[in-house]
Length: 597
Image (tube, rainbow, N blue to C red; front, side):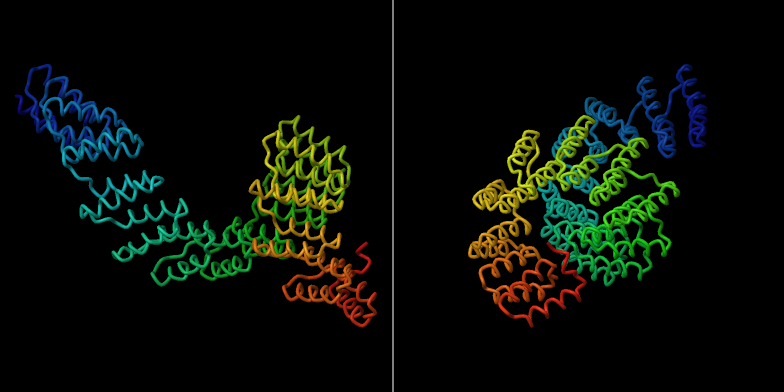
């Protein structure tokens, strides 16, 4: 009868009738019938095939409870099942039980546990498991190494050690291991090492896939090495690797970060030519950079062309358009765009409202700015530091410091913390009005609130001191900012150069010019105009004219102030013919003589 019940138990198990099989099992135990080890294995295999690991473990417990012989094979299935369920501690306990009764775990069991621990991850237990594997003189398989390398990706020394250990043991890596290595080194900015592994990968006849290229290109983009990126980009089609939208998007984004919009637009055209339509975010990346370069019309054209290609504007694109219209003072279009996005179910966010508020403030319309602020709050959109800073900056530019400080108090009362830009807006306002003591008090308040002055903060002070003729304090401030690790920018140097030129100390102005160029900073129109003014004041109009011609050859367009200084100086020297030539040149450039004071 025992054999008959064992056969019945096996039949039920093989036909996935686990409930009936367990009923037979329980009946056999109550009747005192012997249960064959083979029958138990059939049930365990059946539950494993069906991925019913919960039933597998329950049956293992029944086997232990009724003293059914448990083999290494049975334990292997149970441990594997528990690991699949994520019950790694229970799996480990069963392996310990194996060892306690004198059963030696097979290599597979150690590796199953290792893989499970790595996925958790529990590296303290992983280390223990590694020691046991080594003590048993067992070797990892490729999958275990892959998992370890993946999990240790932030610890590149360990990754390198594991990678070389594989080589020493003659274990052939697959391309994924190389990808792990390349990814790890790229993430920490060690692009040179990533390229070295990339070269090694190809030497060993592993062909890089699109993920390899994405990882390398991402690392190179982060490092700003766009020439190397272009080499890989051009290499991909030759290697039969598909260039996807991710790669195009990364490269476009990085070219925009480097202000190289022409290259970003070139890639967009290539992308479209290959049949990839850029999404709204890619268009907005380029449009945002064009906006930051004050190329407003080009940015608008790009976003509107995207609509013509069937790509719908998203929140970011609408916000960029509203910001452009607001900066141009075209509030009719800004509000029309605002209404359009709402009609299409896109809710304006803090940045959208802030763009409108900033535009109103820059054009002196504080009534509309405050109305928009109230509207956003009524709509449940909370103003941010940027929103309040726009208002503060606007009031400061009007010289209305009472209202500017009132906004500062209001934002703090509402739990919105001012940042360095907020304080700098106030400081710059005071410096422009020559109220240096109040500006310095704000600097102290700022630092007391753990905010660090940046290049714009220090430049505001330097410009203020220079306008007062206080070159000693200006130079001292420059020294302080450099000591604190804040690098001067073109505006900083230009303010200093202007200060020295107004005092007629041209020699010191030129020293600063040399320092500026040594720091890879490019003089702008303001820098040239300051020096031209200084040379003209010193009676060296020929030097001024040389600087004037130099700036035009460098692609810098003189402004009304530059032209006025040159024309006035040439007339004083009786060089009316040259003065007239510059006057007509100024008119051709679309500049109006009375636009300057």
